[in-house]
Length: 179
Image (cartoon, rainbow, N blue to C red; front, top):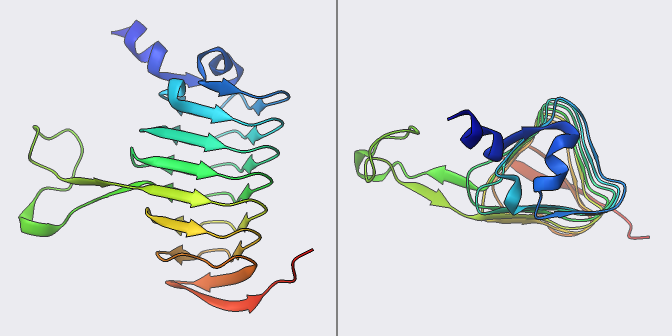
């Protein structure tokens, strides 16, 4: 049993050899945990800081120079794509799946097959995005290039490129100038 866990859940730099792709200069801090690293791709010079948890599901891609801050989580079992030069703030949760609440189905892990109904999706964060602390991003949305998500926001719809959104649910509050 121990060897099964060792192949699926790894912490810190020891996970690099198990990754699907590990770019040059990647920094995985000692207390970061990555489950199912064989479907994780990390771009050059990205940082996965202490207390980050990544449940890779069907696949996770994190681009070059991107930074996952402490206590941020990638969760859900679907696909998560984080672009280049993205900062994911501390305490933020990136979801790639949710449970269906239809037909009284149970919404908890570990039930017998067919007892729960997970809805797997894809979350895409494009290049040059800043996501503040303690945000929740739902599956099946795209955060457009250059966008900013204000701290504490709940994002359940696409965010247009070069906009600033905040709130719960997140709403557009400003437009940024593209460089």
